[in-house]
Image (tube, rainbow, N blue to C red; front, top):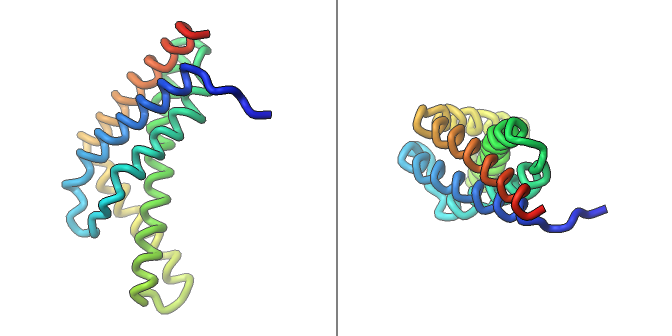
Length: 149
């Protein structure tokens, strides 16, 4: 059974797309050794909107404590999904350049790329943006759930 769209889901999608865009803009200068994909920011914002809609928006209406927890968890999910997607994309791009002799080398390469991306994401500025943005996004989503339910 599919749930209906709600104001909280819409606010969650918008808030977490914005949080992801801000974090992506802070992350962009740190990408010195990897090629910069021009679709990075829109795709990351899409992941943020999806997490805001399907995770944070769905959990809205359970109180302020739950909103803060789901907002921080939403930022964590954004980091996980974005890292997974972009590291797999980079692995496929390198595979097409025939950099990996065997399929298991490509999978190991994807893991190394993901670890490299996460090490850049461990920058204090990005962590602060994700943490504070997640809390604010969770609280705004909770507020929308209370206002429009």
